[in-house]
Length: 118
Image (tube, rainbow, N blue to C red):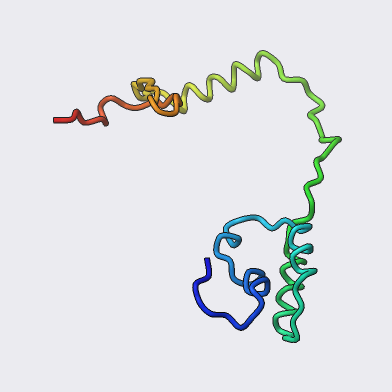
């Protein structure tokens, strides 16, 4: 939100100053569409806007032919993975499942970490 009196076109401001947009990934097509409406005589700003377009991620293109392993997963592979996990979590915690009354999501908590209300 911009609260001030500006002598500059707001589209130019939003193209260069938007903290929410800084947290998002760039949508190249949307950025190009926005910048099509922006014109400025400032060479440094034009250069910055060109760099924004160059840095924007290309459109998503899924890999339709991913590489796969030549070897199938065997029962021995599964058993080895289970053993590795068992060793990693040996002596684990005693967790209790809790369901949130508002969102109905399940969470797991350690009862020893919870303090009773007084």
